[in-house]
Length: 190
Image (cartoon, rainbow, N blue to C red):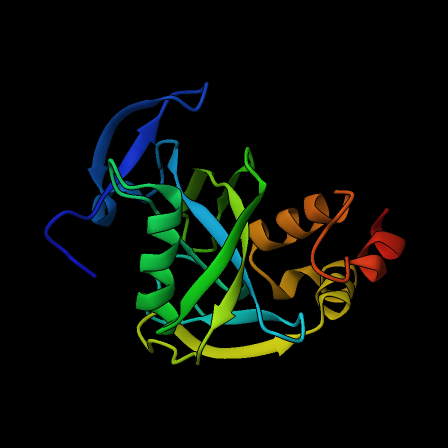
């Protein structure tokens, strides 16, 4: 990933852009609200990819989460940011991007005290071609059926990142949900 211009978009409480800051310095004990995204990647059989964050990640190292996350750069479209991060983190090409939770927002504090404070649209996408995980980003990956993800969120939420748990809860409330829906999660949570 280009390190020369790796800024994030800072937001006000109404989720309006108010400036930028270096991604390397934005996350700490007093992380300002900023723009991010989360993506759930599906294969041809409608399985969803879960990834385990590399141990070198600043927040939630070694924790299972959605397929990949990232931050759009100033002036970068959301689809372009998703494609850039898919390539960087998973060596993957994604198609059929769809925003399923356009206004998702969360704040979470990891065990080290680092705060995530993001307006984080949630997307689903289809994989086109193979996945080759970048070991700096992903230490493990696993394809699961959406109902398995729903069951995991309902029965063992501590095994996943807090944003993934919250996102799956919200996606389960949508009429369409994920491909094949998250019927198990809906039954167990809703």
